[in-house]
Length: 557
Image 1 (cartoon, helix red, strand yellow):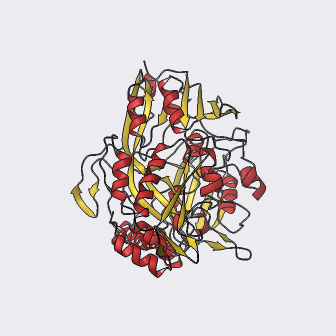
Image 2 (image 1 turned 60 degrees about the horizontal axis):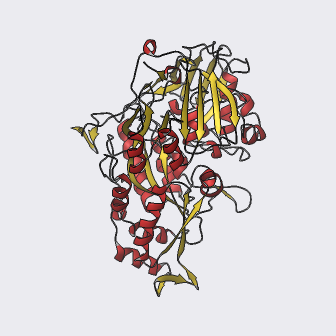
């Protein structure tokens, strides 16, 4: 699930960002992006880039709950349209390959945004990209039909209508309620055929990519080798891709670094692994590019699991975990400072950041024990029990990721002191999200949320309360922690509607304090982006908030 890390247009994370909550003061210098930025004319034409992924996805509809994953985004960013692109500081700018102009053309009585599309832009099927694609995507993502298994309805649910302007290449979007993060919408945009029906939306992009509109086009899948091949699109109307092709390959952590060291991969995200970093650094012809990431490591708590459905137990578990110990262990050897993240929406270096953890900021065994006693979980030997059942939590981790196992073992030892048994359950990495995290088949799960330049709109779904559907069923959409309340929703909606950045920041921090008390996600720390790259590669690496220009990626002499 995606997590946002900046506020509106005026608030950015930069090399000289203001100190948390103290506008005007200078923070320590950080690298916003490390990409070996190189002009196109200095890049060779041709070649194949071999790119390692953490898994081999099946669902290629990024707007579907199962497709809302960083690996899917990494591939689809080379293939699909978006009206805006972000720089490394999180500032969006119009992408003229797809949209010639996009402006707020009215604010009263309703907010209206008018898009003027590039008439040259076409899907790989030959059909032009028109207002009808925007209209169809809005209808699918607005949340009115639960048959569409959408990842996030934020912003789309605030739209009253999407209509044709003066021709097929003008889109008029009228909002029922003000929406400050309107630039976050329709990114990525899918063709109207993908959103024409729930069947098309849910199943039409499983194991296939029917249409594209980027500098690359879909080439082939190899399910045995777990590869996805993209080829330069000869019909692309923009600057042609420098590379002939990109081959993405899904591999577990230890296999990725081995493949890179053996010259079988040209780029992969090392993640927070000191051992992998050391091995990647020593590979012949390799460099490691590192920058402040727009993502953060965390533990998600399943609010619908039998034991953790009691918020007192969730709070007690949080109070039993020393986050600083876990962060120090995770970041050891990565040349990155150990700084805890006490906010679900803003990074430590961003303007407006406030540490909102309150009483949950530091471990407190006495208070944790009192909460567990109050919830009926009493000590019985070394493990607490209630109604004859032990307080035994499942800590589900993906296979091949030693970092997650270490986090589990450290947490296991901490919680044992409180009488909480933590059972570490290793599952296949390809199944971790689709069969465990997304359907709620876990108690606690460690992973990272990856951000966009839009703070509330991209995160709203992560913390929004569930929607009751037929019978007693609750649809949680992107809220993998399966807990929330109306007060959080109201604060986040108010922040999204607020066009004044200062007032929006205040509302975001008020919402964050409520999210902390709910203990849906327990933030640990902002991750560094640490990417191993062939030294001859340009315009790829640790991107921070920057949207990569895939057409410009290539090899230099």
